[in-house]
Image (cartoon, rainbow, N blue to C red; front, side):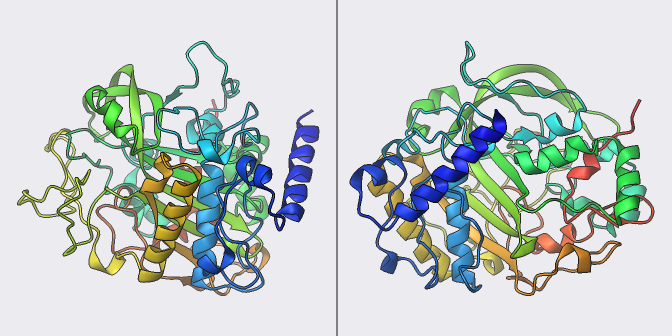
Length: 457
């Protein structure tokens, strides 16, 4: 049955693609809305972005350039944030562009329907995907950085030996957290599309013994093409601000735990879970394609997160920056010493300022979204940057021990202020090329998700 549904979905995409040149108002209303091609500098062979559920096939459109990849990133963002269907990992093709990002719509996006890293590495059968449950969709979330429990799972000396000293950099600043100006910490989640999660589960790579054996047999763990990983950062939306903020943020409902303290390993001690509204503030999308076997690294943020240093806009009420604060920016709190409720002063460092080309593209896409749905919350998000391999290296030609080759990854300045707050001078590949398992440092295809693998009972 699933094969038939996927086949029908792919045939639908082919049909829509063939008809995309026709000025069919009904099709534009249902599938997507796009401006004239001349408005977008996406490359001569590239279709312009549109408010649509269609995930772009690949990035190059006959050639590669930063502008091409910037448009590719937006196409992924728009499609992955389409409303999810009743089948996990697929868009609701009955949804219309005119409703895209409607305030107060707390239903999950396509990427939110992917399995979470906890689902995949728990070795249990994932909960049935059910959008028609009595209380609607509500997820559990318990990461206070990108990999909260890594320190507890593996000793730091072992991690440093595996990762070349980069252990602190794969997390949100040394295992610490980020607190917004309302005094609430940011929560994180990691999800992977069906292609990647099926690969991990079918090979039982959630078990560290199986993982090590698989890596030895295959000289590493090489993810299938079209694998997608998502890392998201969410802020708490206080109940008394929900009515106003729901017009500005993609909001989802989640069960969130209280943090009662920290254990001897500086890991959070969780208490009772309670329902919260969460507003999306940061989104990493990494996608492996034939043209980008080193992945395309795309990162987005809410427009009101934080200013670039020296470029404070007094009209903006920033979520992570207080113009009256005298605190030094981008300073990591210390577990066991600093309060969870003390706001962290955040700025985007000048070296990571959003380029003029991306700023212009952002304005065009935001205007396109607004024209499709004047109320859409997605008009308040922006592309920060995209990293991609100028000289891609296929898996068979890559190193068989970490560090992997980076494929001429470019550009070098990319950081999300909600996920690399305290290490903005680093770039994705600085750390991810070291991702590996075992004493032999077999590579895990630039992905740190396998650090979640646990020994079998």
